[in-house]
Structures are given as structure tokens and as C-alpha cells.
Picture 1 (tube, rainbow, N blue to C red):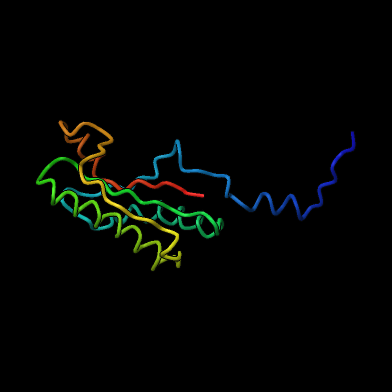
Picture 2: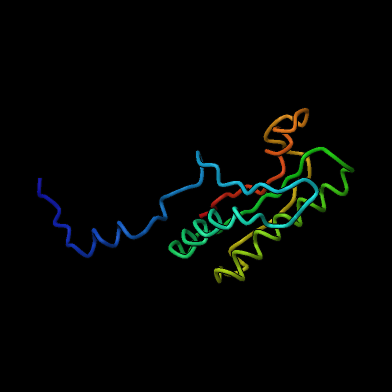
Amino acid sequence: PTKKDYSHSEIVEEEKLPCNLSLSGTDFSIYFEHASADLPSKAKEKLDEIAALLQACKTSKLQLQGHTDATGADRNNQVLSVMRAHKVKYYLVYEHGIRQNRIDSQGFGERKPKASNDTDTGRERNRRVDFKIIR
């Protein structure tokens, strides 16, 4: 069999593109304070990483999924989850120039908890926006 000749430019180009990366197995959730849609300052580092990935992978799209804990009325939690997802989208669009049509955002309220709502720690883990890369 013949050995394939890889030119330097082909290898470098492959190494530059992180498009085969995914967010699965990594906690790329952004966590919020109780009853708040304000973007936490410590979340910006994670969002900057996601923005860099989206800038490198021009055809990838992102789905933002907003969530709340089970404290409060269902209707208020639904609105809050949408607001959280929109806050994250706003940051990626206006701080990093990601095109709006590449980011889908939706809120699930308290319907999809990550942890039990019976403890403070569980409720903290449920107040979040999750990310999913869509190719």
C-alpha cells in the first residue's frame, strides 16, 4: 500500500479546526442566582470559550436551554428560564459577534431538573442554561 503524503498545510489546517469537539461530558452550563436572569460574571469565561468554538466552526449552531428550580409559580419559572437563555444569547451575539440565526434559545422552566429540588444544592444546579452544539 502507498503511504499518503500529507502536506504541512493539510495537517496544520486539520489541527486548527476544533469542529469535531462537542460539549458532551463537560459541564458547560451557566448557573444563575435564585429568581435572577442576570448573567453571573464568572459565566463569561465559559461563554468566551463557547464563542471561540462557534467562531472557529462557522457551520455549527448552538441551542441554549434555560431552566429554573421548582421554587415559585410554574408560569414565572417558565418566563425566567426564557429570560436566562436570552441573556446568554445576547452576550454571545453582542459581545462576540455570533450571528443570531446560529443560536436557538428556549426555556423549560422547572420541567427538566438536573438535580433534586429538595435541597439547596440541587436547586442551585437546576438554575441554569445548558448548551448543545448542533452541526
